[in-house]
Length: 211
Image 1 (tube, rainbow, N blue to C red):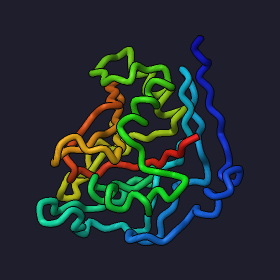
Image 2: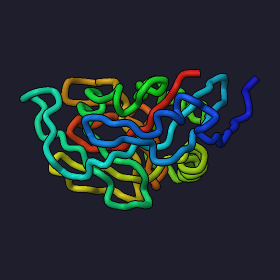
Image 3: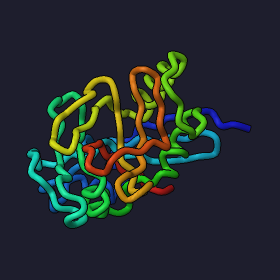
Image 4: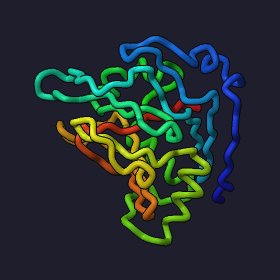
């Protein structure tokens, strides 16, 4: 029997460790979750707890050298729109700093976490192309329930794009040396729980914790 999809809005103080680590120092400056809130997502036998987006006080397009000479120009970019919470990171920065950006008991999500998230929200776990029937799914599930944002991304040169029409988040899972797996969704109904893009792109990050 399929479980009914539920969402539980929980104040972070209900998770003692999370409350104590709301802000912590890292290589990126002072890092914190964008709010003191967590979201419990359950459905189809899947249970997950997600944080809000990660923010830092490191707000420049300075080149970061994560991964050595072969992975240059991996900039860490803050979002320009304060209504779209969270910062934008390269994949390599997320991977190298994963224990700082998502301190225990939180962790950077894996590809499987995005697949399970989509299934728990009532999707298939597979990528779905542009489809007007998916537009309401994106708005009601990924924006309202998961509290995602159409934060867009940044290119290797720091150029921001797609703000307000596309949301994308990194996993820590590599697809190929130049590519990392992502979760993405758009106002056109595009859904990509198994998406991927170049590691130099700047995408959002949200942390997950195991039950």
